[in-house]
Length: 297
Image 1 (tube, rainbow, N blue to C red):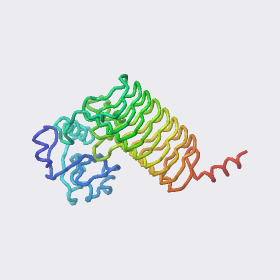
Image 2: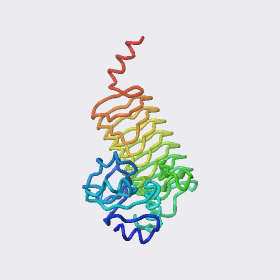
Image 3: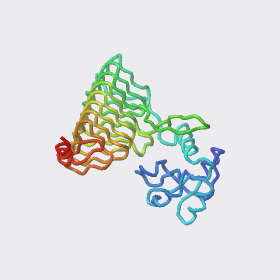
Image 4: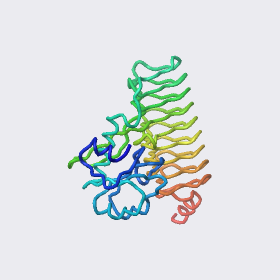
């Protein structure tokens, strides 16, 4: 869509320089080319990557600093607010995708006490959905999956914006994707992606314990194990065959490499390389953590 076309549909943005976009995204979590982003602060101009960002919504002052960049520019007095107002408009206009009636394979076993949204859900072969599980719109569940009681798949994530002086949780247009052989225990929440270009994805044979929170845009690699009360912040990437221990907290945007381990109660604020084991708050290499504990006894 071109910015001029968008401005003809809404009346609260001004086109400073026309351009074309195919997706919306946040500057710190880009995954797609030809993306429209919002810019509230000049210090982030250096982060604009023209291979990913094609258009920007910003204020008049910052727009004057973007003239040398090859990007389309929308101007408004509140870029973040109006970015999400555009997002709402694109959802309602069907820009992101066409809706479809829910599809459930005839071999799937669905409890009559489970709730399955009537549209934008696909459930594959031999998948089992237990009583009081909730499968919301924009959920794609593969074959041989197990969803236990009280678990919610496809929940809205937590992205908050001030609209006319009122805090609102942003509507999500991405997907919660469970590949084949995923198993989720009771009372866990798997949020869908904020944008369709950054879906929440649980790859093959991921297992998740009770009372886990998986935020929007999280990707978990094959055979990884997420233990009870863990919290995975938005847009984190967990590699293959990773262990996330009980009550661990992974900060938004963190990457955990393949075969890594996060021990119980750890708070991870930095990327963890493949094969590393980390512990503590804030988490450090496990052996360093053990030596630290010995030094203070």
